[in-house]
Length: 403
Image (cartoon, rainbow, N blue to C red; front, side, top):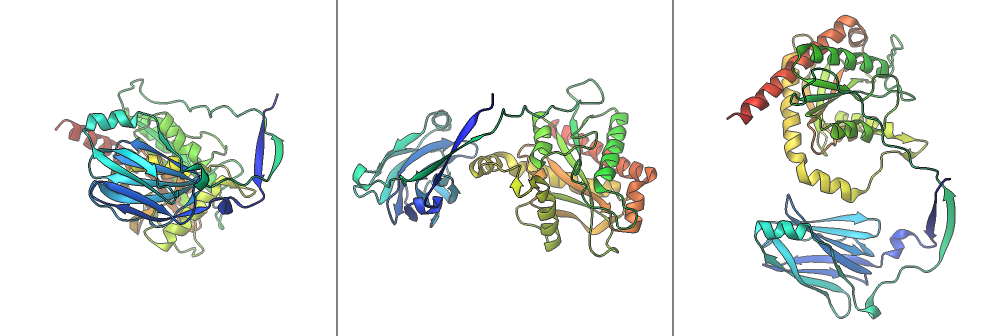
């Protein structure tokens, strides 16, 4: 029997239900004051470790002025949530919240930061939230008028089955996950010369890369898809994370209005694109999640920001090192663009703990590139370059651990 959810749609827009805007976040040596220009519904504080932060969720508040770091606080950030605003204090040293309280008129929230040891901070991070309420007469109230609609949504879908890991039966060997871009109802780019589809070329390339890597006997390999199926972008890097992969390579073939454009490039993650072309490409690829206007991969902003903050900087550095290595090792067999290593905000690269690259193996819109990528000989050359780069990448990592 299907389950049901109740959707409560307020007569007023959600934004209008948020009464107060954060007017200022004032940081002293150890005191913090958050001021509001109107009433808010409440607040809660909690600790986040690695990196060390204090988060403050303010219900019924709009984001406003973030403020500057001082004393025990390196920086202040804000982000909109469904029920209000999250204020994050990046700490210069471990500290916990003490004496938090709303003012008598509910227009400000103050607390002190008490320095603690690293072990005490970690214990506090495992503890519950601290809930705070303004005085009842100065507390924002949610709208009372609502419509109620009941919609059957059926049983939840089971988790996507994990692909088989191929290669040597040795769990100590590194695991590489190869992702063939596009698939199923999403053909990707289509060659104007031969009609070849990107989803077919990327699958053939992924298989060739897998075969070369397995033949080396030095790594294990898994494919996100081994046939013509559609995967949401988060499912692609999600497979790599669930398998605890050591490297994720998403294989694509570029397209451009200028059919003379050709050559391979390697993208790594950055919220700031290296150029307009990179930004346009990321926007186009990220739309693979959207069907009939519905974003199939949407997830809460607070989860993303926490995950990215925790580990992604080092992961991105490792991915950038591999991108440069891939260009160097494959350059004898694969024609690269003059600026081959590029940066963009591809969804498929956002695994926070798996070094990830997106390998645009050439331009399917270019006649020569398209023929090269569709040929068995061309696919073998691409695979050889990836194999050599992967072997050197992990050899370097093993050597660095042995120092």
